[in-house]
Length: 183
Image (cartoon, rainbow, N blue to C red; front, side):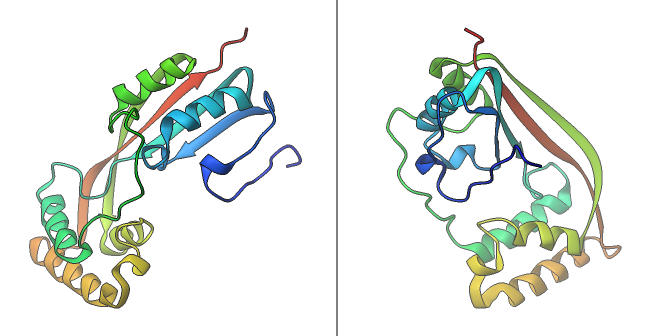
């Protein structure tokens, strides 16, 4: 690809020429950003008629299955408090799809809409741990020298709940699209 430019760093520090982007994607991070600032900047960075897409997934233990409640209890025992990702401006809305949509509309985006969807999935212990280790709150770094003990506890507890080691659930995802008006 010759028309993609990858950037690493804080989203709030990105500088891009006005109208220089055709698509801006934010995956699993919009809730941690200064959303109002990012929405305003993204609107400026996008070429007229082009889109911002935010994407997300509900965590492995966020569903209604009994095994998910069991796993969530283990995670709460080991992870400690959720890290603080910094202060949020007083005018920045709380979590929630409807609030994010309203914020994007207020920033000047048009055709703002969210699209949730679910797919059936059967988790294995390794898949659950792989997912958890990819997150900020349950990564090996976040767990530190307790990671191996956490893993053993989670495996033991989930296998006691269901010794097959297979944990069905619906994976719930969603995305929000917002278009910069053409004029």
